Amino acid sequence: MNGRTQEAQELRRQIEWTLARAVDPGDVLPMLHRLARLAGDGSDENLFAHLHLAELLVERDPWRAALYAKRVLSHRPDDDRGWATLALCQTLLGNYRFAVSAYHHALTSAPKNPWYAHNLGHLLDVALGRAHDAVGWLKRAYQSAAYSGEVAASYAHALARVGRLAEARKVLGRAMKRTASREHTAMLKWLEQGAPADKDHPLPRPAPVPSLTTRDRDAEEDDDPSRRARTKRGDDPPSRRPIRSPLAAELDAVLTRGLASLPLDAKQRARAKALARDALSYFARPTGARGGAAVQAVAAAVAYAIVYVDHVPLTQAEVAACFRVSVASLRVRFGELRAHLDLMPGDVRYATLRRR
Image (cartoon, rainbow, N blue to C red; front, top):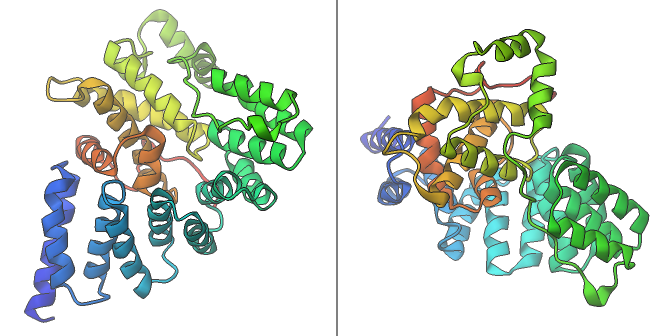
């Protein structure tokens, strides 16, 4: 191993250490640029730098981010993260056909990723007006993530555009039983009018969900009768009691809203709620989360923590988009969360048994 290679490996370790300790990711950009120049073309360190540069810059400079993603793909043409990041760049740039092609490549490498299938179908339907081509992809996403209000709405919209109104109403009706919203109600009205093209209804954003619904509490207690008895006596462990502080309530509401748009199952969403409660001791400090935007970033970090623990094939950019925060903000809060809870992939506290 020559000195240049050794220096590149050490610099990569410094970058990973910095990101894990929640230093502003913007401060890491110079280090990543240096690593990209220092490491040999196509080496693990070189591609690590380019992929992270692409993900960090995708929102502020999608054109430059696309260049970094392409460099990764020139050496790893089957890298689904690289293709998905490139697809997001092209979507933001308005190059929808290019984005569609990139998502096709991402799905070739990760065919079971429902989020890639959803994004591809959404682009085909809404951006390119190819609803017939979109239905199959959105059906695939819906079959894996029927609990997502956004996926259900996208699928229902495409079904309506191809004239399958009864199926569209059925899909949307099921989603509305879980999360009711004015946007979903307006979309249902559009469907009942026959989905007229001149009044095409825009796809709704994820519907707000009340914090800690009675149904969620009842489901948790039904799974553990002894826990229900402890709660009634008032001696349930504090970390497992219903969260009551203003910050906790706000975090729970934002988290629930964002989770509705992610392809996570019921167990994973329950683990996310538990992880959020465990994290409050840190984020409730004076130096912790402040303001709505910060709470959204914390919620995004909690959701990504489950993705990280359970090896879910989603990028940070995809999770951040569901909470409407920047990738940089998610990275900062996830770094804090990972350090505070000492999170590891497969962490027994939060991992779920998932079929591969």
